[in-house]
Length: 428
Image (cartoon, rainbow, N blue to C red):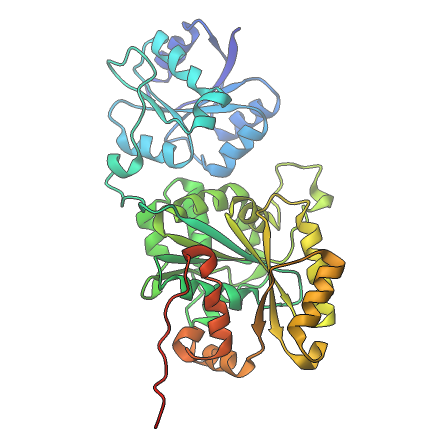
């Protein structure tokens, strides 16, 4: 069966490569496109099943490749002989197959065979067909070895999403202080992905004129996000803890698209042992825009994070309204691809729910939602206010407060034991 190819290539070798594709046994060129817009129109019209793009194609980015994939078009890259930078950019954009422009017809035929969804993409194979390679089974080694990038951690990284319903239940507070506690056990990256009201930068007294998560997403779109770039965008605020600040204005949510956030989390796994993500509250799929599958989604950053996370903490407040929202939020999570949630009830105090608040909350959540194994965080507004005023974490401002110790106990879920805290000396 012959597969149709649409090509958007720049360079003096474009005609020779098209002729070589035409000479293959399994592929024929259906259309030669002048630019990316022409390529998108051809893909939307169903002219091709495979697209060939060059590394220097103007406006080529990750969202464009995602749109081509949404049209059912598989994409392969093409670079000039010796163009290592072009190959690197195409691979960072997520292309698994990169061809050299001087390949023979049978080599092109074999290399494009790796575009099979059950082959290269599912198995994570990266293929590069070069001169002197008669079989397209030559596998490209990783970026870290080819281009001198920092090596990935030997310990498997863990992505922890901190989410909760509307009403400011304390998602950012839990995410920030949990990341600070995890940093005592291993390298940790805190990412602010809240597209409605990011606050991590303000909590730590960091400048947010140039939000790190926006710059990282933009670099992911352009294929320039690697470990070194992510490390530059995420400054270290305390030993072992890096922070990627969020967008300062809610109207900039369009900068955080699903393909960019997914690639950002992939690189973050290689940078730190623990990745803690502060998510926005909304998980609706924008029903009014559901007819247009290519339109940007306001909640794409949160939905992508929940789908990519290994662990999920759901934060709610210990009052009648907050508990009702918490129950409904956990029910809504059943319709979203996400890990099994662990419930964290924040701001526990007798004045809101009565005497013995933990027992009352456990009875209510167990009766109406079947929730068990709940973590309770006590109300300690004084310590939180002091930490916010100083622009620090609870571990730095009030290391012996009950709230800090309760959040530190959550680290046992991920590191096996809670980090040791300094004890006060008892006066005689």
